Every structure is written in structure tokens, then in C-alpha cells.
Length: 157
Image (cartoon, rainbow, N blue to C red; front, side, top):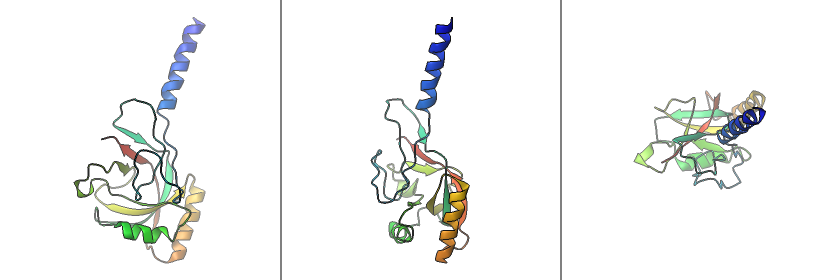
């Protein structure tokens, strides 16, 4: 009987680890080796197994939303200009459902999908996020910047 429970526990442990969220890769200088993340996306580790899924989430993290806009209006040139202000933290933008591009697979939780946004990665803790927000405010460029806890979501095609 104890062997039966041990097998059940080991099986459940495998299911739990298979569903663990992906670790975010916030360094803008490292290339994202996972899937085919685009330069404007915050990349994260995705499963290497062959399990079919509709989506997969990153670990929760904080971002500073620098600005919001109409969907699909933040350009890559603007993102790159902003990235220069924050050389050690990934600046990313929402392009999900833009231009009917079926290869846009990354969206984000805890945001209104009716808007686009430009954001900078702010860490895994609120303390890190508050420090990043102060750094953002010091630039004097982003009125209304605010902290948001979110996850990146890979939507499988």
C-alpha cells in the first residue's frame, strides 16, 4: 500500500514540475534561445516536452508600464530608443494580434488587450520594481509610468 502512494506522489510531482512557469530572461543583451522570440518580446523559458498546450506562462514578474497607446502603434524604433535608456533591463512592447500576424505568439497578463504598451522589466519583487520606477521617473520622459505585476504568455499556434 505504501508503494502505491509513493507512485502517486511521484506522478503528481512530475505533473507539477511540467506546469512550472518559465523563467524570464530579462537581460536585453542576451539572445533568446527559446522558440523564436522577437526583439520586442520579453522572452522566457518554455517547455521542452512534447505535451500539447494552448498556452504557457512565464513566472510572475514586475514591469514598469512606460506608456500605453492604441494597439499596434508603438514602433520598434521607439522601443530601441527606449532600450538605450535601460541597458540592463529588457524594454518590451505588446504586438499581439497586430497586423493580423499569426506569428505573434506573446501576450501578457494583467493588461487591457484593447491597448498597446511599452514597458521595462522591473524584477521579481516589489522592492526591485519600485527601484526601477524611480529610475524611470529620473529620465523625466514617461509621465504616468506605473508598476504592474504580470506574466508573459506564449500562445501556441
